[in-house]
Amino acid sequence: MPSNVNRRDVIRGVGAAGIVGLAGCSGNGGGDDTTTSGGGTTQATTTSSSARTLKQGVLLPTTGGLADLGVPINNGAILPRILLEGETDFTLDFSEQDTQTDANAAQSAAQTLRNSGYPAVTGAASSEVTIAVAKNVFIPSGMVGCSPASTSPAITDLEDSGLIYRTPPTDALQGEVLAQVAMERLDASNAATMYVNNSYGQLLSESFATAFNNAGGEMLQQVSFQKAQSSYTSRLSQALSGDPGVVVVIGYPESGKQLFRDFYTDFDSDVPILVTDGLRSASLPSDVGNDMSNVTGTAPLAAGPGTEYFTEQFQSEFGNEPGVFTSQAFDATAVCLLANAAAGENNGAAIAREMQAVANPGGEEVLPDTLAEGLEMAANGTEIQYKGASSAVDFDENGDLKAATYEYFGFESGGGIETIDEIQFTA
Image 1 (tube, rainbow, N blue to C red):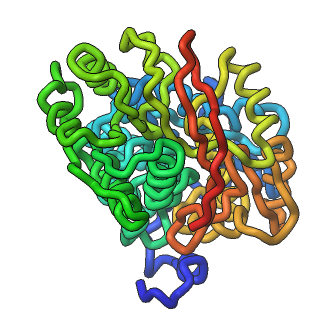
Image 2 (image 1 turned 45 degrees about the vertical axis):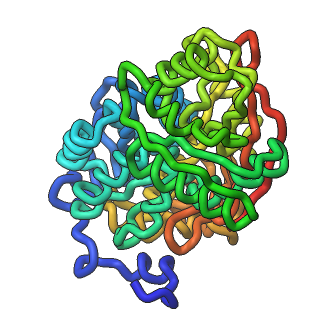
């Protein structure tokens, strides 16, 4: 796409010639749909603009390496359906699929959603998985994908015909935030990284290295590692060679447990370590068997105008505090539903044309606690702007967020996450 062409204008012009929609597998589109919602079969009618079915897929990891984070994220993604029940004339038809934190399993699950006529999907979580399902299922099938947790800069450059969005910020921003923390808060003049060997790990490591070097720091080494290994001692030795002032560790809880067990058993536990959002797990210290007092980290922070309402509703429904990317999952689902209502049909191309229109500045303000009213307004053609639980959800021409708030956090000795500070960052 030429750089001087606005993506919003492009996706509004997408039609049958540009994207193959889901007309062949989504029932009657905006007409009468027989769907399953909440375990029962209901017949939607066409007596009003909101008396139709909104079909939404959820594709997140409830098993595998990201299960610790994925289950709460999945809860955040389905919370809009729970809160909207009985509050709207729309019938809400959700299908939840498990990626298993595996690209092949995720593609199979995404194909299930496609074959069942779900035109928009909240997911996936892992950047590696999101890229795979986007390239091989969502984009060829004309499905909208809105990830609540994928942060790899590689997603920005996908040739996606306006179909792929995300509600967390790109790691092009987080790399700069990490470099700022390493130099200004940890007073590190040199650094090393250990990163999981996939798109998320590699590109975030490179983003940090570039930002750290540009700020006058010295990168000693970038060391990759594979997931789910029995020992990380040799990789830790490589990363710690040369006595770096800080080591940035980029990975997931499944691998992080063994990695940090090896670190505290075999190495100097006073070395400052920075982790990223993938390792922001409140149970990590207890799983490792160490208070991890030398470890801090950064992660996108929920700082939208609907944060307080979202937190209250999440706690009430699921009985625990929302975790990393849970509010982004709520917002991803909310924007997809609003775009579907505005589109007037369960069609990926039509929904894609409305994603920025319902989220970006301009129009009546819709918040998480007024989502039901927002759906009605969107269906009736009212211009709206959704402001979410995680952020204002202002998309740029690539479907990325224009600005984000990051949390600088630490691990509490008795379990849990402590927010040390908030960092505002704009692309």
